[in-house]
Image (cartoon, rainbow, N blue to C red):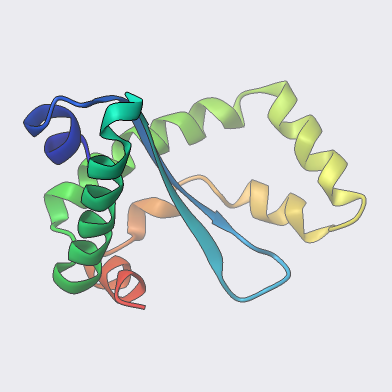
Length: 124
C-alpha cells in the first residue's frame, strides 16, 4: 500500500493494515485502512482492491514479509513490557483462560512465518 498509494499516487495521508483472529470461529478479519481526501476515495478504493487481488494471486516476497514483520515484532516486544497489556490479558482470562497461555507464548510467534504460509492464506 505504501509504495502504490502513498509514493506513486501521493494521495494517501496515512494507511494501515491488520489481521484480527477470531477465537470463536476458524477464521479472522483482515482490514486495510487509508486516510484520503474525499476527492480520491473511489480511486483509492479501486487501487486497494487491486492490491488485495494481487496478494491473493501473486503472494508476497520474503522482503515484503520481513518489512511487514519487523515493526510488528518490535511493537509486540514493547507491549509485553507494558503493565496495561498484562492487565488486559488477565481481564480476558476471566472468560477465556487460554488467553494467558497465548500471551506467554506470543514472543517470537511471527518470526517463524514463511512466505508459503502467508501466500496460502492470501489465496483463500
